[in-house]
Amino acid sequence: MSFGKADEKTRDLEILALEYMDALFNFAMRMSGNREDAEDLVQDTYLKMHRFLHTFEEGSNLKAWLFKILRNTFINKYRKKMREPQEINDNNEEFSLYDRITADKDEYDPLNKSSFNVEEFLEDDVKYALDNLPLAFREIVCYSDLEGLSYEEISEVIGCPIGTVKSRLFRSRRLLQKFLWSYAKKKGYLKGKKGDIE
Amino acid sequence: MTCKEANERIYEYLDCELGKDIYSEIKIHLDLCRKCCNKFEFEQSLKKVIRDKSQTYKISETVRQRIVKQLTEVHGERSGIKQQTGESNGTKRHKVIQLFAKRPAYLIAAAVIPFLVSGLAVYFAFFRPTPPSPIIREVAECHDQHIHDMGVFDFVSPDRNGMSRKFNELRNFNFAVAVPEPNEYETRLLGCKDCYLAGRKSVHVELEKRMNMRFSLEIIDGSEMNINNLKKEFSGGRAYHFGRHKDYNVLLWKDGNTLYALTSEAQKKELIHVADETMQMRRFRDFQPFFPKEK
Ligand SMILES: [Zn+2]
Ligand SMILES: [Zn+2]
Image (cartoon, rainbow over all chains, first blue to last red; front, side):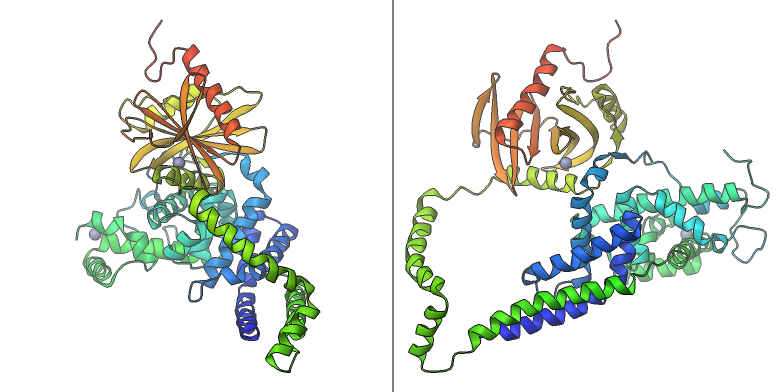
């Protein structure tokens, strides 16, 4: 009976899966916004993982698979919240933080102390900008910039073709830069520019 | 390589998603072009700032222990079963008898299985449902995507005229988007967005019924798709074609040159009801899809 061996294998996979608990929790925090919900989500994810581990194809990506389970759990659990439609009103309008910052300078020079440096953004600024992104945009920035998932892995997690991943990531970053720009203005990071734009 | 070409791939470059050849082409351009180099460096440092300055949340030790314990417990149950079935050690025949004695259910199973198998054979030979046609499959997949899309729309409005205008704006041609006008008590419009279906641009309109059921309405203008080979049913003087895939029911119908596809988890009857409702409104109102005439 090969039962024992198969069970051993699942056990190994599960031990490996436990390595991703912090990453999953971090993501769950960003999506749900509070500790209690995030803890429930991670717990449900591991129980579901256990139940469906037999469907996991050997050699495929465990991390992407776990994120997919977490994401689906989140969507099912918070359907109500998700039902409030969100409008992505960027109208495909061009926006680049770099272009804005360099608008009245000949060139951006990171060593030039008088120009704005992205390092000046604080933890809070980044947090607010991320939290203000609509869920579908926030998740994709999290996958790519925070978790370092590849386009292919992201496409697996959200079940969209790679082309969709690219364009959504592009729109998400553009929106994120818009938010960062408005914080930079509000907080006066842009020397001599405070309040004189828009 | 031009600056424009390099800039189009800026994120793929920074995300390390490019093949070796194109990657080195861009790298050569960056070595030569100060302007692009500055921009790429800026975007790279921004990416780093977002990662480094994002607070990382750590799960509490108590919860971690709880999850690990739970997993060990579910495993414990399983290995219990393993031990029971692995115990017997005698002759082969002995083992079989022991197995049946221990688990009377197996005896029943042994008796029932032949019937089950022949039943299945008959089912597969005569009653097996035909696999869904490609269009049904595609529409159902599209709907599945929309409900897993976290409610993101290009335009959120309960107003069908607003939606039609939005699509005339989005596209620079006169695409008659007949957005349905649902009965507000039961069904409401959630929002709409651009979509692709069966190799064509489509309009996706999402409706919701009784606060819990979501319907995707996909509208393709000028579709030559032949849907006549699908099963059909008549209601309100209209032929509705239908199919099923992935636990979703799909309803298709044509209005002139426009193809409509309505998809939901709901029963076929309910889909026809929603379709009737929306199409009736359209008939009564003498719908003006674009550039409203002046009165
Ligand atoms: Zn250049
Ligand atoms: Zn669609």
